[in-house]
Every structure is written in C-alpha cells, then in structure tokens.
Length: 95
Image 1 (cartoon, rainbow, N blue to C red):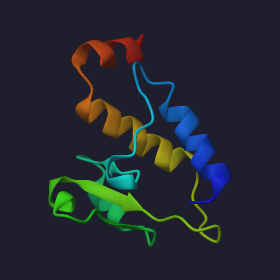
Image 2 (cartoon, rainbow, N blue to C red):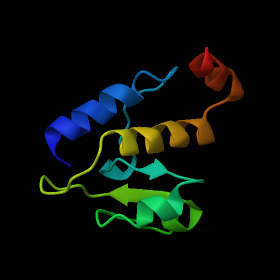
Image 3 (cartoon, helix red, strand yellow):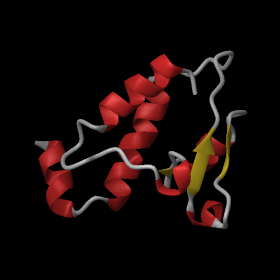
C-alpha cells in the first residue's frame, strides 16, 4: 500500500476508542461482514489466507498505481471496528 494512503487510513483507524496498531501474522487485515462482496470486487483485494477469508477477512494489496478514494477504505475500517468492538466503545464512537 502506498505510504501516504497507509498513513492516512492508519491515522483514521487510531481515532476509534481504545484502538491500537497491531500486526497479527505480520500483516494488516480487515474484516468486512457487510461490504465483503464490494471489497472483493476491487482488483487489489483478495480473501485473506489461512481460511480467514471464509470468515469475512479481506487482504488489500494496494499499489501506487491503484486509484482508491480514501473514503472507501476508511468506511471499511469503520465497519470492521463496529463488527468487533464492544458496544460501550461503539457508543463512544457515536458520541
């Protein structure tokens, strides 16, 4: 992923209550229970390996040549957060 796009998305994700950067398996992944089909229709997206793709995990491999509106991955990130965060943190996000 191009560094400016990665930095923008990561900075946005870290604004969510109690969020932190982590690298399970050495990669950054997103779980998309509602936008899975939309995400997988993108040329830079694929189901995450090790069987995680069957559970809605998507790996994004965005190259510098790819034109990706920042709002799209930001939206996917918020959806992912809402899918796994406790209700009390989602309430803080909505405040």
